[in-house]
Amino acid sequence: MPRSPQTIAGIPTDTVLQSGNSRLDALLPRIKRFLEHDVASFSVMGKPTRGYRSPDTPSIWIRDHSDIMRGARYWETDMTTAIDRFAETQTADGWLFDYFTMLPEKLPCERENWLKFVRVPVEADVEYRFVKAVFLAWQATGDDAWMKRMLPHAERALQYVMTDPWRWDPRHKLVKRPYTIDTWDFDYTAGRHNWLNFQVTENTYWGIMHGDSSGYFEAFSLLARLYRVAGQPARAQRWKTTAASFRRRANKVSFNGKFYRHRVPLVPVTIPGVNPEGQLTLSNPMNINRGLADHKMAVSILREYQKRGARMSAFADWFSVDPPFPAGIFGDEKIVPGMYCNGGIMPLVGGEIARAAFDHGMEEYGLAQLLTYEELTRNNETFLWYFPDGRPSTIETSTSPDAMPTDGWGSSAMLYALMEGLAGIVDTGKLFRRVALSPRWVAAECGEVDVAVRYAASGASFGYSYAHRPVHSMIALETRGMAETSLHMLLPKGRIPARVRVDGRTIPHRSCKVGESMYVDASFAVKTNANVVVEYR
Image (cartoon, rainbow, N blue to C red):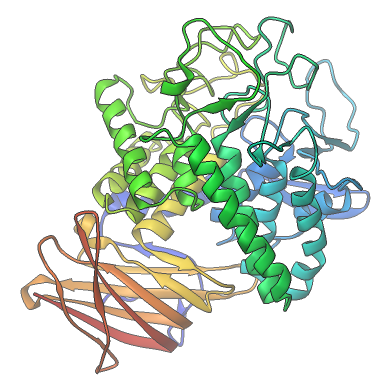
């Protein structure tokens, strides 16, 4: 069995991945370097604050920070101070700010280093991203007391979204927003505004955007889990019930049989040359990973990406919207088809596609996204978006004066797919005390692998060594850490499980087919370490 040198008494002391595939092994340290360049630190009214910035602005946006933490949590020791700042500035109505900064943003015109908190009025996704950030921080720190202090903020944020006339559509009982491109922060005004518009007006074209629905479904579900941990079962059940009914309504309204339609209009609007029913937009794979889509819907969405990718000339299927909108209709002449959120190719979409593909029996497709990203970033640069021909975005082609080559949003999504999808280590509680373990190395033809994940904020960790011995028709695992473990392991094509042994003892197992992929499922407890052998025939 391969063995990581970064262990003490068999317990992982760092996040590592050694698969024998040099391309896959390059991703973890490369993405770590990207994320190390994306840290933003401020003293906010005397309080040290550390978070992760967007690639196109030096501010800490809750949307970037919460998504990036899915990767940065493996090395980041400060998981809470940025969230604390958003919680402290929450309004009495419950809404939260989008971002804060202490640096001039519009150089050279702006020079003032004010402390600024900003809310973009057309945005409807801020509150669910805050809840996700709270959940991720709690998982990594294990700090129940801090989590309980955040619960009133999280609940107030969700109550605001479900009651405010700018956020809630009472007829469909779903979240609404102005006519933005998916989750982006400027809307269509039919030429009534001479640049990008961020304000709600009497002429706003309201609609339901599917990415908001999946974000709030996940937030309701996570809040239910947190209330359960906090010892408030009645509140937990209430939010669980809310999530379930919300999911049914969202899928009925937004899924068109193949994928989630871009938007469901609440105010009639027609844009010449645009068929909104046919536009596939970037939140579709996110809807899968947030749990809004069931397996059949997930496969349909992924097949749609494959189909469109095959007929397009783009270097990857990661388009932000396809087909894109006509040039300039959102008020900026730079927003032409194939750039930025109007059809640009985004690694953040690719990472979400990969994660979803691993979960839904399309492992080779998931692996292909990771390998495409590895090739794209061999120059040690990664951008928020690329043109379809592979050219990276630049300051000149962007709507922002800042465009760093260390995009944390996309790189962290790829790391999410690598560690949770391919390596298959998913924390289902906190501190890796309950782990869903789904090694899928058969898809990558890796025979010996050593992998471990560790939360730097708490030191909690989980890892395993993997060895595939096809001549003996078996896969051996040596797990390290202490966890209630649910195994869901991919087997070679055409094989079915015969027996599962843990520390020499045969335990119950079952076959589980996901699409055309065969998995073996079993559950067992790990106390420091366990030797697991899966025999197949």
